[in-house]
Amino acid sequence: MAFTPPSRDYTENPIDLNQVLVADKEATFYYRIQTQALINALVTYGSIAIIDRSQTAQNGDMVLARIGNEEKLRLLRKNEHKVLLCPANSKYKEIDITGRQDVTIIGVVTYIINDKTIWADVCTR
Amino acid sequence: MFALVDANSFYVSCERVFDPTLIGMPVVVLSNNDGCCIALSDEAKQLGIVMGTPIHLLKEQIRKNNIQLRLRSSNYTLYGDMSNRMMNLFRRFVPCQENYSIDEAFLDMTGLYQKDLLQLGMTIRQTVGQYLGLPVCVGIARTKTLAKLANRYAKKHHKNLGVHFLANEALTTQALKATPIGDVWGIGHRLSAKLLQSGFATAYDFMQNAPAQWVRKEMSVVGERLLKELRGTPAIKWDYTPPIPQNVGTSRSFGTLQTSYEIVVAAMATHTSHCALKLRSNKVCASAIQVFLQTNPYRTQDKQYYQSTVVELPVPTHHTAELIHHARIGLERIFKKGYKYQKVGVNVLDLVPENQIQYSLFDSMDRQKAAHMMGIVDSINAVQGRHTVFFAAQGDREDYKLRAQYISGRYTTSWTELPVIIE
Image 1 (cartoon, each protein chain N blue to C red):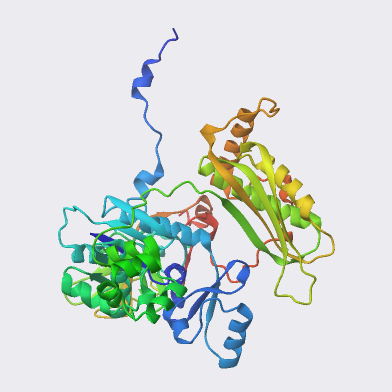
Image 2: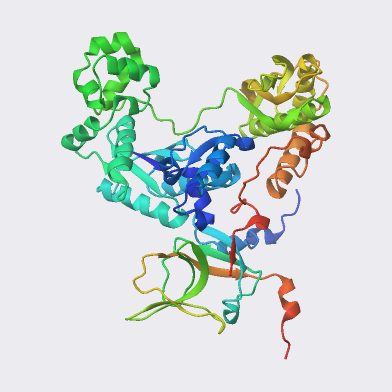
């Protein structure tokens, strides 16, 4: 009889990123970001956004919005009077979408993935 | 109660999810090899474009009438993934479903906790619309045939609501009266002409006035079943699990006409390898393989040739190399020099479950080892992409690859082809 190592009772499956990054498999889509509009929200040019279309956007969420037939990534800011799509970069303007029929919130950005090439250009001071 | 849910202009809708500039535009999706129109948006229909229009006529129309028609090559990788997502979403609402085609499914709504089926239909439509960006219509009724009919009614008369529930006698009668007999599920051209001639213009006429004896005589068991279904008694069986396919085939036109044996045999090997993969994923083996070869019948200036042959396999198999070996024997039998070939194809025949194979006494192949090898090939290709590991016989795919000039990305299955948000 071979010896059964005691660790066997403690075996678990290794970490699977899907468990954390994907809440709803059917409604999750991945997009490549090529914009600087959200640079101050730590979203860099070239990163990947994980977008969950099953979630209803809340105030403060980062969203993928369709404006006419253009798609933009923005921060959703709501108050009693207005609904705004805000950039995180002073070079871009905020968009007032209050009551606009031609705007749809497609989904909520749940995670952003960067790869190691990003750090090369970071200012270290 | 049953529901039939289907996506509106499914292929076009899939394209629009990832390319919003297509929204509101006339869009046409082309067949394999960009031959002709196989799917079109409402806007394209309104321009008078019909299914099957060849690409050169489409291009001519674009040029002559200066219309803004947008073309797409068919992207089955994308459509297949979106279809899977949609079917999986249905599973959240009902315990049983029959995935009837790539873009439609029957849902069994019997005995649900949720009693308001119209509301359930609207929830399903809303969910698929939000989660996947695909517009769907829902028809709900007592039988599959009536559910189909209700679905068509929703499309025609309640486009904005997108859901129609034949909840009572009056609503059912109204829908039956509004449905021309030729639009009833399962009634083809010839039958429709016959029924019209006999004075049944609508589904209602047929259901109300067709004498049972006449139906039995003229339409046999199909007609009797139809009559039952239209009267609200389910008569069509449910197929929850698709049956094992009896034949599997792959054939494609070449990108350009081919004369060389080397290229034809390489394309044939690729088709065979697709068939073999399908066999393995269905856990069945083929007992014989059919090979066929043809020139382009529309090029009347060319010499014409069509030939096919069947090669029996010593032992049923789903091993790629073995199938290619036998397909090649078949091709050598039928290939003739001096023709311009348009298409080569293979069909694998007489499929048997892999665990019921009678091994031959004189079989010289190590089948366990071979199966193990194919398992490794499949798992590599599943992760790294379809053509990562392939048999040398498949040759250089560039020689015979399909034309797909207007193809969009594999947005949901490939890290290198993700949709891009550009600003």
